[in-house]
Image (cartoon, rainbow, N blue to C red; front, side):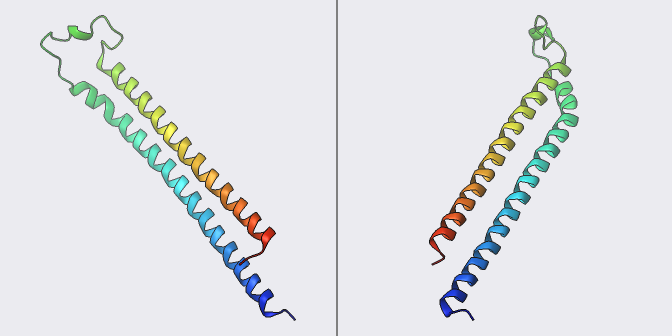
Length: 120
């Protein structure tokens, strides 16, 4: 038969475990939704970019302002913008995943520390 303190300690440990599982599940859902949102944004922008690039009006020089550059066609500029957007979204997702993983590691270290010192 357990003493009152042992029951309280076990209850607190069980509650902490359930809360940690909820936080982990929440972090995974957040990470998955962020990745899905970035993919949807990137795919939507890639479908919209050719139309946007084609609708850009030429200046007073009738299209000669980019005649000597690699941006001479409107489609090339659109692909460059999509590439930069994909890169930036990739950086954002990487930073988000890194932060979530770091938070879960900190939670794990807190749990180990709590287990070593006992629940209050």
